[in-house]
Image (cartoon, rainbow, N blue to C red; front, side):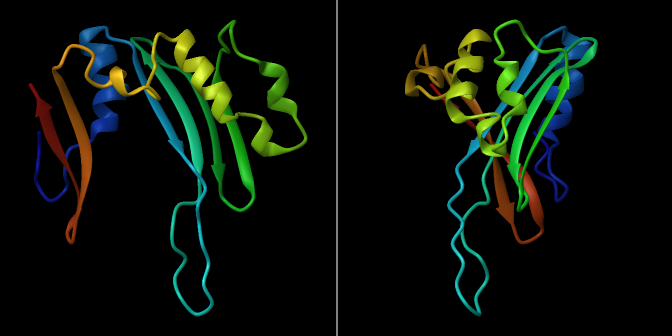
Length: 147
């Protein structure tokens, strides 16, 4: 891992190196609840909320779905939908209904992932986890191993 001031670019590895050089399909999943709180005369606290799934294969971007709170909420998609997707929901009038948490969980299951279950992260008692570490100089990545 590059722990320099600029830090490692985990997204570049997931989007380019593993799919192209190793032939590994990668899936990035994010589900950040909206819990922003506003206080008069103070900075906002919490997170705005977002939900994303991105799939890359050796040919490049295969599928991208994103719902993010930019005030207003915005939904984006790119790539060919999988057969299991509920594409009719993408046209719902209420933007937050276009890609719900339940849909994300279901899509992950169809992709062979269970990231919302504790056992997913250490199924055999061994794991490697890369997490962002914020510093005064910027963002770097810290690798943690569990044995």
